[in-house]
Length: 343
Image 1 (cartoon, rainbow, N blue to C red):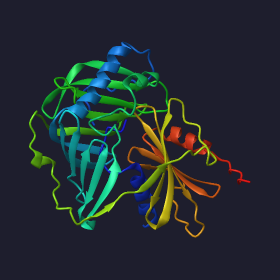
Image 2 (cartoon, one colour; image 1 turned 180 degrees about the vertical axis):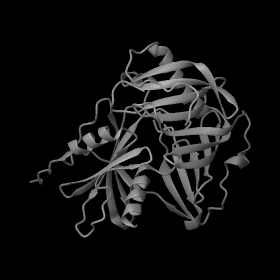
Image 3 (cartoon, rainbow, N blue to C red; image 1 turned 45 degrees about the horizontal axis):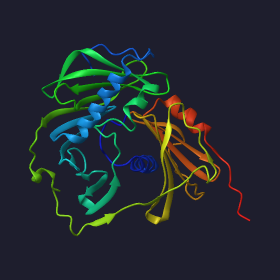
Image 4 (spheres, one colour; image 1 turned 180 degrees about the horizontal axis):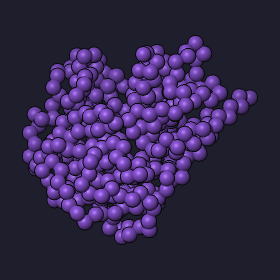
């Protein structure tokens, strides 16, 4: 579940990590026991997850949320409106370099004021306060959903605790706190197999209202003369290109694309998901004159595990919000079989 900061795309994370390396909770409720148990009331629990997802997309709300990953904490302001047909959203980063994300349905404009640039992106469906990348019913195969009796308060609102417990050791668990009145997700924690918090995101202030002025959704800067960048991409079939990628149990490929970036840098990407967690594979040609490919082997950025490896004449960066052992085993299983030249 990517119930976390709506920053740039996963690919931007890979590029940032590679470039940076090359250049240079206490909880009052008891932590869950992350052992698999038989599912209880699957239909009711699936309905609850669907309600959480629907609330994120169809309610009008404005607030500030904090995202903690490792020792870093970042805050963002979000304004979200649903007019009956379209979702319109503004997300403003409150820490670090100024950034704003203006979204209309799946289309996102990332505003970068110091470069006077608008980067066009696509929105994934699991960005906080949404959580699902698949139907709620499909989650049952990989997780057990367990509503807890004790209520809590987040951002001044009463919420219900829900544990999402993995059925195996190949994925993290989650603890949610869902607004009782509206079903909006107020807090989400990612938990390892010991029940410790790996990362968390939570509203610190939230207003759920039927009326939000249009002015709260406007960009903070005039962008009429800014440059507009959109990565050139198309759908591809990595298997037809020679890649043999066996998804971990419970994961399915959700997209396979080719993107062309500046300086004609061509990158292939595959995204796999179990409905909550995702794994991404980035494939680029290996250049002998470049010796700074990072990471070599396993690495970690907050709760996101990464694995870098050279296969044939390609460099692969595999990353995901899954345990390091899952990611490493998966990355090492990827194979490349050169496609025979056409006669």
